[in-house]
Length: 124
Image (cartoon, rainbow, N blue to C red; front, side):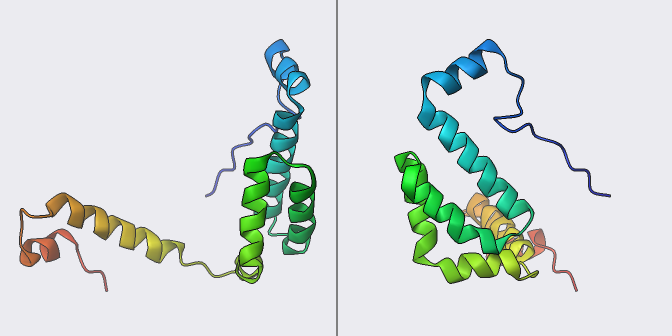
């Protein structure tokens, strides 16, 4: 069973003095937070049709780091759109590759290939 933990948005977070004063004192932080949550919703709901609109908003009035991120998405917009629309993922494979590389790095220079094979159980 999957449990979704609700994370309060910047705009929904308790309006303590600190939160409100930071948002009022620095509009860049408020805008970056709003854009980040919009992107989060876009990913969560897999709304690829809203991606280009989000990129345009970020390029128009986002702080420089977020603007740079939006521009980097445009470099391979087809791949990003495919990632949002296609239901398949290589995440499990990437996780196994990362685990094997971690074991390999830990054993580097101290063990043989035979020991590496015994530490990485092959599943069929």
